[in-house]
Image (cartoon, rainbow, N blue to C red):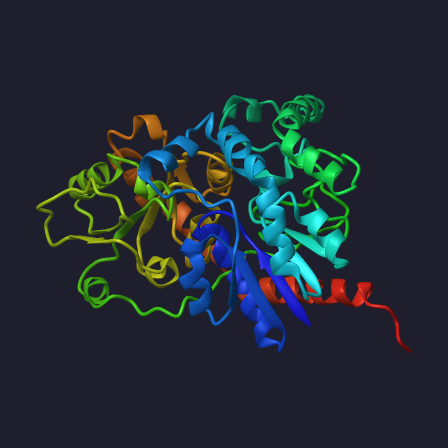
Length: 416
């Protein structure tokens, strides 16, 4: 069997797809992954076939900051990148799905139903963060209206979702035009409804992070966090640093936010020094870094979180779902500074689990206060270790690929 995967976004979006694709390949299937061209090396390093996928987002810091604006970023991304390039995305999905037995896609790839229909294959969608279900019975913390989450009435959020459907329907006009040009009816709203496959929706997080809701699609199946085992050794200086001192605090903003946030790493260094803590700053390509730091603070552009967090005292991060999953797997508490998209909701879920403090990105002049609170809270550390015991990485990817295999089996004609 041949599995076609497609993903749009950061490493946090790519790595779960690589985990599933590697599992499929390990079972003897062919697997191909479509992603932005800057992910080509990561895909090919995993031993997988690569296909390019549009739209390509320029990684210039000012453009990333534009799309990650707390309130306007999601709308900008949908209008100016996703729907403005829907024809190109559809063409690339058709290309990666050619000759495949199933097409499995991540967020924002709204051309998947059309591509699968044209190719005559089943398709599935991957939900990495609970926000994407837009549930009225378990309302998410939306970056553009975080106060709404405090209003827990399902009827209110159904009304809010109805307004969202109307608004995103206007943004999706290029999508509807493409459907008509291909001979399809306009169909349901792609942001709220049509993005979920009627065949299979894989919820790639555990039940304790977000339990199944009555307004999820009937095709939804909860799998758990998928983790990609990166074939990369620890840098020698990091290995020495971890071996020769107390567990450090790890500061990271992931593979996107780190490029444009100007003050975070200066504030991080000050907090570590004020608390007398060793620290590791994972900075990405951020050009505005503190200088003349003591030996107690190590600065690296990147290190695999799976290798460093189990040896950390805590992690300070932006709340991307990949970093949240890694912190839970490692059993370490967090301080979360959410920026946009799913991050505010992920942060709130960690806070409700009792393993995180949440800080406001517009008031991060000092991280010492929330960091001290989480480090001096033994209950947070105990709770984090208990939750780590409930995460089963291999079971999650195995279940995901099992379900995809069954989907292919259901679609193949019986030859007996």
